[in-house]
Amino acid sequence: MWRNLNMGLFQNIFTKKQYIIIIALMILLIIASGIILVNKPQQPYQSPPVIIFNPSPTAKVSQSNVYPDLISIVGVTTDENLKRRPDLKRISILPDGKTQYSFISKLNARDNIVITRNGITVFERFIKMEDNLEKYSLDYYKRVYGNPEKEIVGSKFYGIAYTTYIFAGKGIALIGDTKSEDIVEIQIFIPTSTNTYLQQWGEDIQPYEGEAPGP
Image (cartoon, rainbow, N blue to C red; front, side):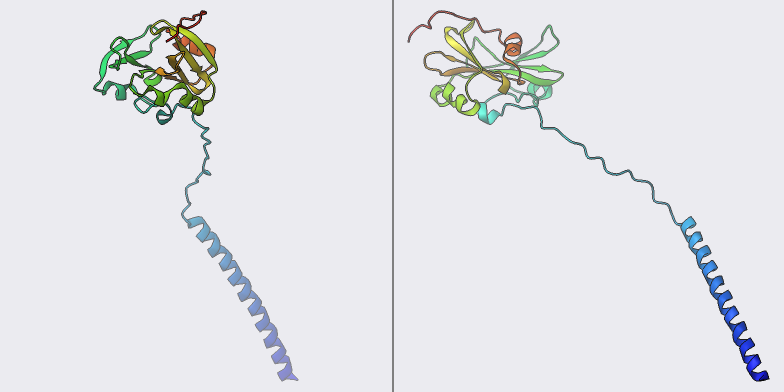
């Protein structure tokens, strides 16, 4: 009996010691975890990536769709590009602050011109005089751009036998022979309305109400 009593007491003490050891280990584990978390190097806060939506660029006239020898691309070509061209004749500052670059053309009496605003091309006038005019007749441009928004017969420079074909929303206007529709001049600009084109770039237009002369 005495032996059994000692055994029960021993087991009771042993059980209490186990509880104490387990509790002590848990406390040590919690303390150690806290120390590790406190001393762990903090990663600098990184804000989530910002996704910037880039809207489609303003429609520009493609050189390949218009004519391969154009001097500039509207909205892209800079003053620095234009100043380096070997065919540059002169540079003029216009009353409204724009810069006009005049270049040698195939027609001595009418230069090719490029106008820039804030250092970027906004308008070009390109003289198209070549042997094979039929290759780039009005019909070619109609296939590319559709029908002109407006057609005005009469030109101060070319005369009453020529028509300006205006595709203002596409940023292009053409001057061509009214009868044959052969194009002699191309103008490219920032796409706009017909009225705005006439106000800003239609200085050569001289409306003619009569019948165009025959061949």
